[in-house]
Structures are given as structure tokens and as C-alpha cells.
Length: 133
Image 1: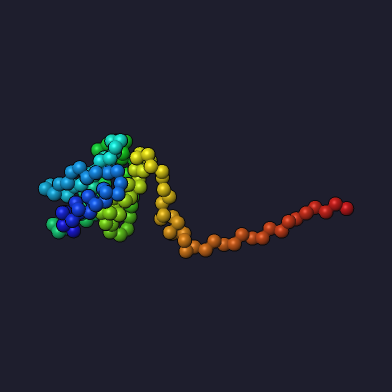
Image 2: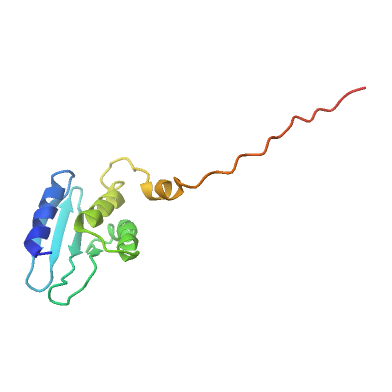
């Protein structure tokens, strides 16, 4: 995908959440920098399949406070399958919800994975009474 298209997608994504796209560089690396109050920042390095560069997204933060929250997004990116920029950004946003003061939402992955699994019925436990004679 052309870098301009990635920038456009990132700007559109920012309209639905507290983050702003504050910097976009296509010279040395295809990098998009994001910022939200209260001091939450991260950047995304975008794949460059056209020139043989990296083929996966990479998220990172210069802030020590933000790094632990990016682990979920980093694990998601490194899992199987190609990811889109919007999928990566949505996972980052979900990761930062506690820092943004937003309620945490359940991760649908667990529910989707187990949606088709039928639970075994619980065995009927008959009431066993003690008879008094």
C-alpha cells in the first residue's frame, strides 16, 4: 500500500478516538506517530513491500509508561496472518483504554474462539437425602 494511503487511513482512524496523527515520515522509514492526552504516545512502522523492506507492522513507544500496554498489540502483530493498519491501530487503542481513562472492553477473541464449542451438559446430581428411621 502506498504511504499516502496509510496516512489517509490513519487520519480517518483518529476521527473516532482521542489520538491525533502528529507526524508521518516516508523518507528513512514509513513511520506514523500518534499522541493523546494525558501524554500517551506511540508510533507505527509500516510495511514496505514495494522496496523489499519490512513486511509486518511494528508498534513502539518512546515512553516507558506506555510500553507495557503495547504488549497486546505487539503479540497480535506477530501472530499468524497479515494485518491491516486499521486492525493494528484498533488493537493499540484497545490496549491503551485504561491509560485513557476509558472502560476496559472484553476482548472478543476468546468469545469468538469458544462460540462454536459446545459445552458438555452438567451431570444431573440427584438429591441424596438421609432417611431417618
